[in-house]
Image 1 (cartoon, rainbow, N blue to C red):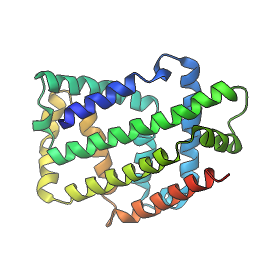
Image 2 (image 1 turned 120 degrees about the vertical axis):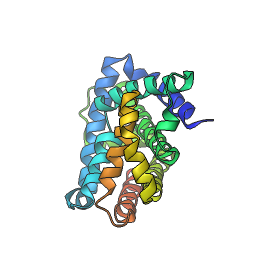
Image 3 (image 1 turned 45 degrees about the horizontal axis):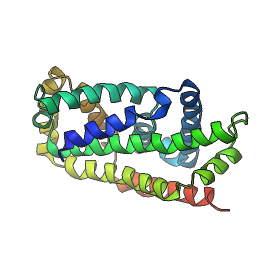
Length: 231
């Protein structure tokens, strides 16, 4: 399967999620995503307060754990992806293959984050609709969702996005190829995906070693997952 087909399939699955047609579920999901962002910022305070790691930390919060901004990005990317598949666009020729692969993996990780939080929102509405969204209730929702393994996988997926992007873009030739592709990518309607990838790469630039961010982030998040699922 081509990377573009994977992108389109991922986004079609995202567009079919029930919160798009259910305002109440959407509202609850938004509250849970807000809690997640605040929790991540608290857990990883050192990464958000360090000049070298803060850009990537904020990128993950704003783009991987997105909300309405990601909905807009998804719409634009789906149009671009479908254009590429039907021959009216040449996405795979405009954006270097390895860069495109990193971008698609990032989109998949973002969609998976929404799916996991959507499970929590559905349980909240079904069983705790009128209860305030406290830390204690979030732990209950996590345990009822019973998605510990999926949460762990999603954390490792973020690690893979970061490391894959860093690996490929340490190449001076590939960096230049990506920069040169900007004008053509914009002209052909692929600005959203180009910027999604480019913003992530810019966020990584201050880091001398990607593991300066990845290692503590993954360790912190895995520790939280273990703590939440303790009975």
